[in-house]
Image 1 (cartoon, rainbow, N blue to C red):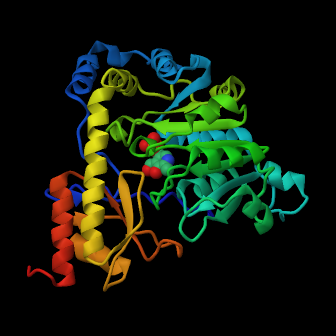
Image 2 (tube, rainbow, N blue to C red):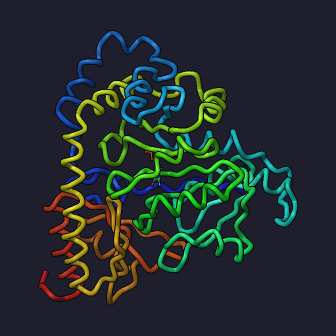
Length: 365
Ligand SMILES: Cc1ncc(COP(=O)(O)O)c(C=O)c1O
């Protein structure tokens, strides 16, 4: 316990008037019908336990994705599901082991690319599994299977592999064909973490229905404006899904979260309109920041990763905060030169661009 480090959350300040672009929340509220459904559920039913397997929600999700409810497990946010996969598929390792032909090492290995979602190593450590971080290409592209074989760090027998797709924090998207090649080569369980996929042009859900060792993780948090309610789900083979059902908490998804997620699925057109707004603001902000000398990576998500000019990213973080704009900076060496900026409303994006102009000295103030 003394050696563990908790996950570092993005700041959630309660300061009025702050423009919050640090935790990839959706700037648009849930649809009025979703809010009405949640309000209507706040009555005497709160004394009852919710549906233990989120069955009505699983049935609706199964219809949406053209699969069976047995292909789906719902979690208290996708974070819970990532933790469940770690517990279900990787063996705790009694002491650190060296990679090589050691099959015991592979059984305990939780493997992921760097940079990607910073929760994966935390989950591996909590479980006492071994971490296997493997660098992405310098442009955050996915190495090919041949490159991974040559690199000799990647383990094709790793018990569990997490792939953030599109990637966070770079925002880079991956083609389903490259993900398929990777899944095909992998012998352990692969989780394709598609938390941001609604802002990309392509998704890899079909791989979870094609391969028995692949799970796709989705969340209602980002594209569906429901972080507060904590609802995520996996799609995958009933054998993997069944294993996860065995080890989850009995009532892992709260009742209001289930109600909100079900109502959301009746309102997909409302949310699709929001995706388009966010994508168009992303394009605008990327263009503005590029004009100001930022190096902006192409993004398929609701955030952009950008290397700022003049000052270090760490200094920009403070300078923006002094102007009441919160963005995210990560200290890991691969991304320490960048800021991760959530795409807000057009007004918030304009405020950020204006603050950047002033920090650079193009405008007074
Ligand atoms: C890549 C990735 N996966 C999963 C999550 C967790 O989302 P949820 O709110 O569903 O737990 C996040 C949240 O930031 C994320 O960035």
